[in-house]
Length: 208
Image (tube, rainbow, N blue to C red):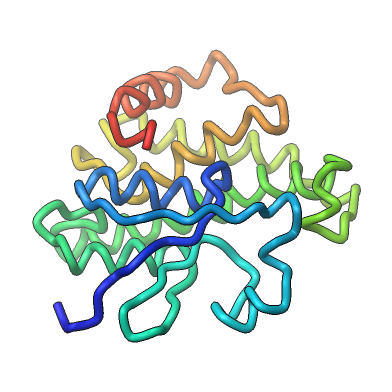
């Protein structure tokens, strides 16, 4: 790894993208200071924050050269290079590609639909979103389709991509746990998904 070192992560601990990074680093056994920012107070929309980090998003990784790295998966990739001996983005050419594919599917087909239901349907989220109630309504059935997709993939797999826990599982468990914010439970007939959730939830990293 080059001479640029990670200094701290600016985050909101409850936010799903921040949860993804926390779980990833816990799986790697990497410790780093965390500074909290109050997104429900709109602190990440302040001019000084955006001018410093280049975006209004969290989490943000501050680096020793004075730069800032944003986007949760980009931050995870930075640390994957720092500690590659615990691979969470895959091991072989095919596995790496499948992890990338399923990580993106879990974002687009599950995590984001849940977030859209919440951010556009809950009046408390007006601080974060110019709300469109119809978009919240439209995404509710998409959440259930995403759960069905995940259950099908787990029919013959211990984890989402075979026998190895990966960043795709991290995105998925964060999304599944995020269901509580929209008062949705996993349907009981999705047995493979329920079993996977029970197994993954036992990992110590999930409580990071």
